Image (cartoon, rainbow, N blue to C red; front, top):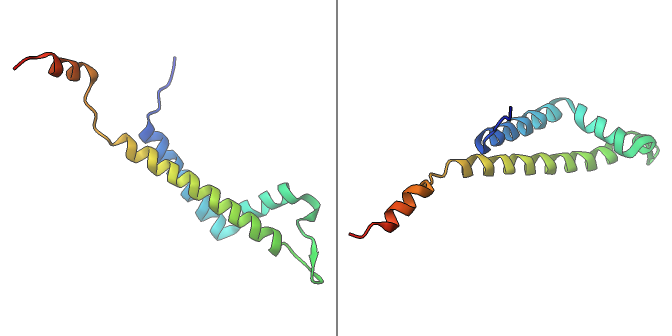
Length: 101
């Protein structure tokens, strides 16, 4: 059994997921912190200017995450709106071109 998911459904899923992750990260910063620890490892809480913190690494991760989620959001919007386009079935096109009026 094969499942068919159309472009509109995929677009809605991508839009919803990107907005949910964006909102979650904006309110809690859990996603940025986790990604920073995965990517930077032990250098995530590196001492900068005698202050131990994650503000420099976190800024980079926040920017990459925002760019990625915005790209996913735009891709979802493009899929959703491209599925709204009305098309004429091929059989009707062929029948219209073959008739001589």
